[in-house]
Image (cartoon, rainbow, N blue to C red; front, side, top):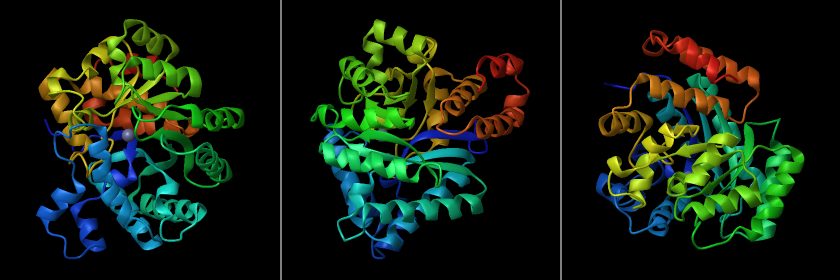
Length: 345
Ligand SMILES: [Zn+2]
């Protein structure tokens, strides 16, 4: 089956993990394909999340001025449009891009403007999630949430996230920023249950109260947690290939995505990064089909769940649903009406 033409939704996608060879050549013209693979693509089995992050840092180093931020953003939108992603939430940490003198505000404005024009040109919908990072101070986290607050509603910025080294740093510095977000009604997601187990997901749910969890797949190790996620309708942004690259699982077959799905947890399929992991959603869907015999019905359900939990107004959600449901492979499903009613906006 070829999923390239299928309409798709992606909620968990890092700008700085998604640099294609094409855009690297624009930023560093003499880069060969071999160098690209060595410097900007993670080994298919990193020793851990930290080794993976060190590869991402090579991309971040290139994204320190307006022109490079523009090029990288446009390039990512081209990649999305090329495989019919109809809606994407792209995330990045603005404070990673101020090494050469840009202000955080300029970073956000540049990425926002580039995304706005590229998305309009490509005819896709897209929003921005601003990330704080685990290693950041309380002040850096507050600066980031205030950047969200000052731009949300008048730009493509739609939410807040915490990313990076889950195992190395506790949540203490970030609780205030997430409380601030809750107070202002700002939608939040948080990386957890990737480098650490279910206790980290519990900790994150209790202290940060996000509406969604980035990854969260190690929740499968705790039956109470799986029940809680399902009951409270907390959405997991699952990134299967990425979890293999960071060496969480040995093979696709060992990944818990299918078990989580069957346990009734709301989840979506995502790449995390398209360059660092050398993947796209077409490949993710293919691997799920090969490993777990996933079919059109499952992909429809995961995409409807993604739209339901997207950080956008209901009217936009309804428009995206229409696009999805009209796609011939989905439209002909006997369960279509049932599923559409069950996973409503
Ligand atoms: Zn991520």
